[in-house]
Length: 185
Image 1 (tube, one colour):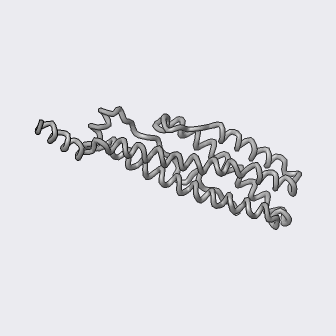
Image 2 (tube, helix red, strand yellow; image 1 turned 120 degrees about the horizontal axis):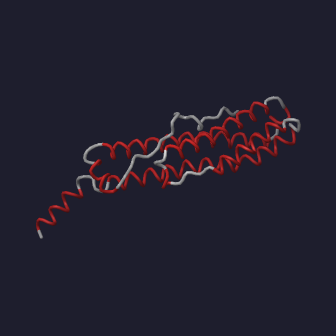
């Protein structure tokens, strides 16, 4: 009885809970990344409608933004497949395409002084800038959570627990700040 208690005490202090705890942090950080990308996607229809009223002959740019948004929202990455580098790459590419389309839209908006003065556009542009900043922070937090998790899974004694749990390293963003940066404003 005493030996069992001592064994449990020793096991509880040597990292048996570290991998599940870090895994939960990775999942929580990923949820924040998804929330911020969703927030950005939700702002786009209002932004497009506002620009459409002023820049009617910029249909190609508006269409690109709408199509990029549709593609970005169709590519999802849930916590179960965060360890799949290919899935992460697809997600990054779709979000990167949306960022590029939004950047083009912001460049186009510079050509229309009345649009730049529109209160609704100014508010939407400000919200988009804030969301891009939130995306950058959420990505940074996710990268840090993945780094801690992957370090634990790949080093001793975490590697032993990883074998027991069947834990694998998580995929990370390939380009630091790649699709989390958008030159708006």
